[in-house]
Length: 143
Image (cartoon, rainbow, N blue to C red; front, side, top):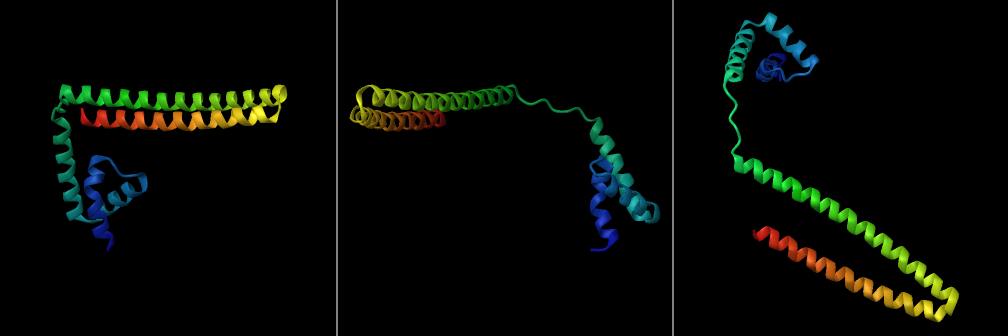
């Protein structure tokens, strides 16, 4: 692609002020030497000025409300995920501390029974939480 063709692709962006300094300098230098590109750059500049003078359309109220609700739901989801992770870490530490305490007080067999029971209930609780979360996600997608 020639220098002229590459500059022609940048003319509209230059008129809109969207080029970086190097590209803008390239366009301006080429426009000083090329009358066709200078005229096209002037047309784009006039078009940009005309578009800038038009009033901006206001988004519909329902769109703003819907977007705000989606952002709030996402923030709630992130907060709930963080809280669930913190509770899971706390529960793990708690189970391990109780297991260690039982091992110290009642011996290894009691600690093994406790850790086995705690592991089974933890797995069942996690499975229940996943099922409930997936049902809630499905209910939200229906609404």
